[in-house]
Image (cartoon, rainbow, N blue to C red; front, side, top):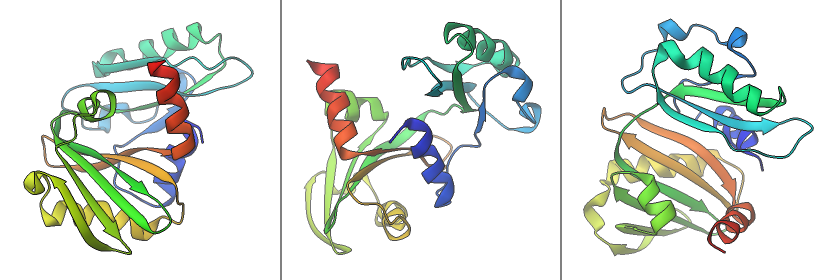
Length: 195
């Protein structure tokens, strides 16, 4: 599953997410001035056509600079890429939810997902079997029951299994999903990254 396919799944299941658009050039950007941001914009590669994958990423870009940054990144891709652009955010809490056939695992921490995903700093893990909480490892109070319920709503909506969804709660209190990966691909990328 590509990054693009994962974002389209988030769209399909109508999970809360940042206001995003998929563009190949600055000419395709719509209504940028009307979309509210508070710490800038994120631009990332989601697809490369007829060429090797290159992950280009810019975060907290000033709104006025978004069009020129998109075009600069496209030049690096030799006009063969598709990007997603959306308002950036700062984290209050972040985590993942692993959806397997009969088990759901929510991992969470206060602060940024990067600490959880890249450094393995999990503050709490909540284990569910068929919708019922069976165990908690770590600080049970990292997530409120209402926050866990929001994450579990994704489980009830999505028909896919063996996937990981990344989610976060922004410092402005907005709950968002912003990435879906299948477990095999996530494992392959982690092995490649750390070997």
